[in-house]
Image (cartoon, rainbow over the protein chains, first blue to last red):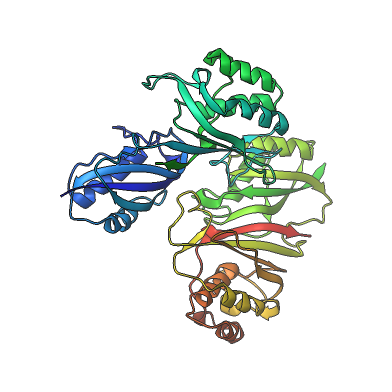
Length: 246
Length: 246
């Protein structure tokens, strides 16, 4: 019997070349597909809600796979966790009807981006934050963030390389969460994201925080639809895929 | 001119064979000594406040080194941080008089031990917690903790291997910090620690939490001065050296 399974995955992206399967490199998708194949003796394709890049983490990535099996969700849940390396954790596994697809059925996704703003770098957290030792002006960053919310053409914040029909995305919310000591967490929910969109937004918000540009200039960059006007891409290790909503 | 420098060090112990210099293995002491030697063209010995074992972390390890140099603390601070790998961070460097010794001058040390008590392991935090998926009874653990406080012979909680004159130590405080979701943090301050003492205490406190022994039996184990009665050593990655007081 063909069954369709939905899994929620946490992973530490530090050691991986990203989500997407590659022939020569270690990837999250590749590792999970191998583990599923071990359990089912079938070649199985895992569909993620989207790719994450090398070094990016997830607390709530969602993926689905279909296969002809008598195994139950609970057996996959326990079996995959026992096979997978300990930087990939299957948080849940449930059976869905055949129409469920992790990417096409997704309504929105939530990302967090973590910035550590202090004089000294952190040895312990180095793989989970963007360390910035110059003073960031939070008020200006908050102000700029408001311009992101709503439906906009985010072409200024897209890196080329992924096929897409449109560069318009609807940002449902974008804000900096309450600051805990020197940790600044940017949270954004949208119906979809362009390639590097969160990291390009964060890179440009940091330019605002460094007072290289004003919140109003941030808005002008958004309206310009010109990638060249935005700041460099923020590094991957601060980015976490938190949740995918269906 | 001979100068004596005190440094405070943060490190992620994951990739290291511990603090103490070894010929064949990567160690924290070894890496910092190499960096100092690079800056001074001298063979320099770094004295830590104590050793930490492989996989153990520090937010506030203290060490000192003496050398004949015109370099200032600020130059060491910046230079060492630029030479060292990013899982070792020098948090401060200051000049002290010649009598200061990181180990012999220390009055007390504070360690934290982090336990993640939930059904699912954590991919992101796996190197910084002891993951326990069986329910821990916190109240019993709190109760047992009280027996640790004060001056006791901690022989039951010592692994052999390090020279010491006495197995009596004075525990200034020992408590579980306020619980944040499923994270349980045990904090202990003492005038000194025996080999594996914190990890052996935590291993046995977890036995209390699992109701394998009662808080009163915990006390009996302490009084017995018999290592064989205590529980196995807790794993290293949950342990953090937080602060050394002088």
